[in-house]
Image (cartoon, rainbow, N blue to C red; front, side, top):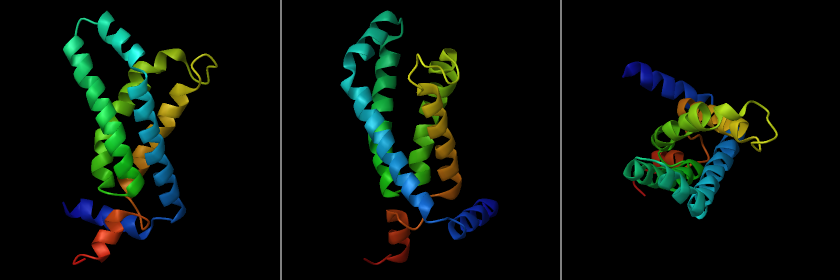
Length: 147
């Protein structure tokens, strides 16, 4: 536990301010992908119809939608950022290693979904380490505990 606290203290003191704006953009992008996921119900229903595990796919779709919308908002606002990232990691790992990997790297046909998923996954690991930074609700709540 002490190692985690030391790592968090180091990351908080060595967090560049420009990284906060990348965190905000990442959170907004994840929210946007959640809205796109929800709005494309036709493809989602087709995937569920073709599968034997319809209940599992329905539960997974609800998890992805909820995690993207709520988690993206939390990441953008800097509210419990590491906690929100932990819910995003399985989704992005699945997108990188199972969904988009077979289409190839820098392929024109997949609209660069693999590269985008990989970049988001790398950024999630960066913010899992660095945390939310100074431009965040976490930082504000830490400095204003009685407000």
